[in-house]
Image (cartoon, rainbow, N blue to C red):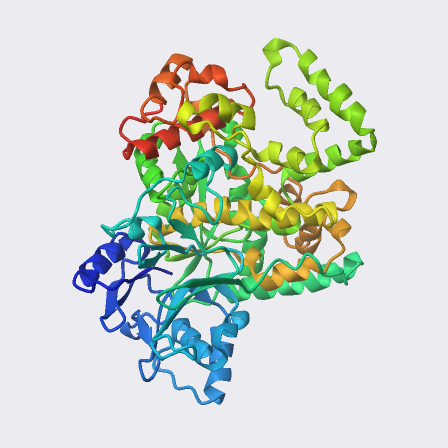
Length: 624
């Protein structure tokens, strides 16, 4: 796992010094080595900060060339099936100089061209620089590649004849000629989703390469192509529970085994939930040495999961480590979290994720994580709520919109924002809006009340455009939700959070439950088996039932929730004062413009936006 970056520009006098600055802006992603290469004939520079995981020798140095140095790569990630691919390429005559997966990718590109990515099983973001003259006469070609589900990040900038790519926004901003114009629509979107949706960033000219896509650049044009999508359109071929358990279980075990391939020890993030405990159970059936496991606890009982983590750690004999996040420790953690994303990001579980990453990095370089289990195996509570709302659609639309929905206005004023009032109001919405309202931070009405006059001209703006982009009315309801979350919430929230938090601690996190072959196997299963008898993660529970204790199999889901919103004071005067630094908002009585529903989450998002806008975290003491 590493940090990568590159620049293409006609002025080569400063390209090397800028490249070094951009590379070292992400030194946390690769403390083991720092390298760069410049090709002045094409005005190209590439660099990498290396975290050594596979082949720890200097043979793994990036940027890395092929045999005749006509093709180069700078690479971040892991290709878990690289050994099998290497054997295939060696039979085809390719000669290797290292034992890295990186070199396998170079030769795969030589052998199969852009289609090489179809053969890779792993998490990755990399750029190939092909110095050979291209068939269309262009002198070179660059190919940017991002893995199928977006575990690894890749940003790019193309403006005023300067092209830049990087693992993090911070690297791109090191270039003195980068245009930093803000995208106001992205800020508006952030207050809807709690993250800036792909392909946007808060900077108008810095973009995100979407998961499952490649970007080809020839010095004058970019061409983005999709090479993989979640196969939700295929007709299910597995319609019995027994066959589903056998097939999906087999692929799951294979995925975990592949994710253990490493030249350094592999640990585990352990919450004691079903996902991480499943991975631990399978992991222990494959390795003899007790692994290190890592858990976070809170000094607020309702958010503590440590009891379950200890049960799993004891059963599977791990070297278990814990750290407690307290109200007071937030003061030390918060400044790091505010700056590590390069733009506003309001998932408050980023704080415990950063804390557990720091803990794990004291013992290992690599951990397995349970990320993706909720999306792949149907585990979120909002799935259940949305399905209940769909059952009410048998009621005529006029009654839902003008009858039942209006009952919300009769709710007692002191209960304003109550979840049941919200539920009544949702009944009258269409299916997409019902789903979006469960996940949004600020409602469309609240944002328009809140934004200053010069930013409030969003009358025709589609607040839910990102969800609408991936909403498929033609799909089975379960597939519809899976597809939407795999395309939006998973890469832009969950995987972004984990990548930045772990890499900030120079730690590699691997999510076996997001192996693309596992996702494809689940898509072959009849959807009703995933949610049989209304039970979330039903199939996963059946697969692992014989290996886990009942206390973990049937424990209530908490998710990686935090007590942050409880720790934030609710004094409106204090809040209004803290939200008065930027020119985004109408600063008179900000809190009066927000409903009480999800109140703490709203304030947290607003405070983070203000902190980013101010360019510093000092003022955002958040009155803990």
